[in-house]
Image 1 (cartoon, rainbow, N blue to C red):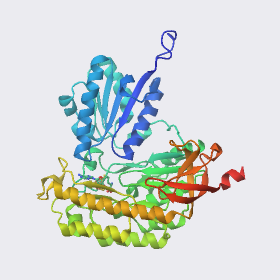
Image 2 (cartoon, protein in one colour; image 1 turned 90 degrees about the horizontal axis):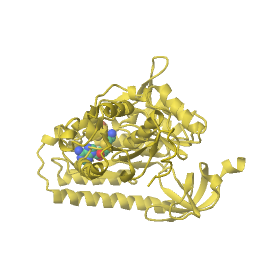
Image 3 (cartoon, rainbow, N blue to C red; image 1 turned 30 degrees about the horizontal axis):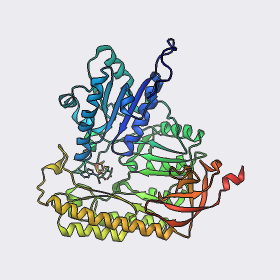
Image 4 (tube, rainbow, N blue to C red; image 1 turned 90 degrees about the vertical axis):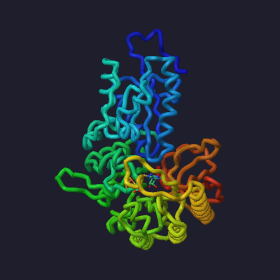
Length: 463
Ligand code: SAH
Ligand code: F3S
């Protein structure tokens, strides 16, 4: 419990204790951090890490699959009891479930005070004040273009890595997906705003940036000269920022994976040799029914170009949906074939979940859940085997990792990540290495990480 500065500090306003729980994607993780930044600029706020301690609870929700949505209401049910004990407590629901359900949230959970969407989180302080004055629940799930980013304070830094959101929403309307409805259509942030944010992060020691968006390569950001900056160009601008030596991005879409972007991978050493390029299925008829607007051959063409421009080290990952309505055994085997051809590293895979309001939800679906689970298990097994093989092949080679801090399990070890996102632990107690790029030799492949040996760190030697 935080019982520190109570009685004697009458002149000081007691900080509000804020607990945020985040479900779903990295965009949500990013948004949640920004909510903390934002509320802290408005009033004294202390972030706490359990709901029991909180005055304000915010739940940043995900509606991509059924389970994600159900989780929201069971979580709210648990917090209701806390609120009964502490009636002054504020409960807010944001993110995609909020966006989709809006005022309906109150029907199922009348004790919720605030409902806000992914595009209105910057209005949180206002909404809180309004609720405080009126004691009436406040709902705002509108899509006010991209004003959000003009209203957020510069982010706080924790560690040498940071996420930066570059665009919001999606206009691809895959037939199974709720994102275009919950996050709205694609809107890109202004180029200058993004570069300023990254400069601010670099000034505080951030070395690695992950650019976020539902379709980052659909980025078309307005520039100061009223031009439009594409995604590949954005990467060149970021590469030029001193201190930023590793750039990642997620998620990209096969449709706008231009040759300029492929060339950027060849030309920019800071761009990680890893691409997450979701394909969903390896069957043309399923891709068509999913409205992905490309074929398996189009996808393989991109992969071939990427591999030939970069080197064999390029690591690829994807998202897969199994059991999409109408998926036959043959379609599934086509996906398995694609997995073999590409040689994916760790990837995400899901059983199709019908989402209300999406076109695919009305398609006939005759495959049993048991069969879908069988397919998912085969696919996941294959991907895991591929990933393990990739890890084993790394043994004996040296890699550059960004040292992030001490291993949680063993304080005699530091840890960092390789370009292909493997955690490497290595024996060292030299905390000067944290935040620097170091060369390590991989000596052992473990289930979820690699064991390494420190080789050298040019940056440390240069000091
Ligand atoms: N912008 C990304 C997808 C974002 S959603 C893209 O271009 O593909 C993240 C992943 O969730 C998707 O790639 C998909 O694999 C999965 N997903 C989305 N809707 C789903 C649904 N209705 N059922 C199961 N999985 C789904
Ligand atoms: Fe969803 Fe397709 Fe966009 S999966 S986020 S509609 S690219």
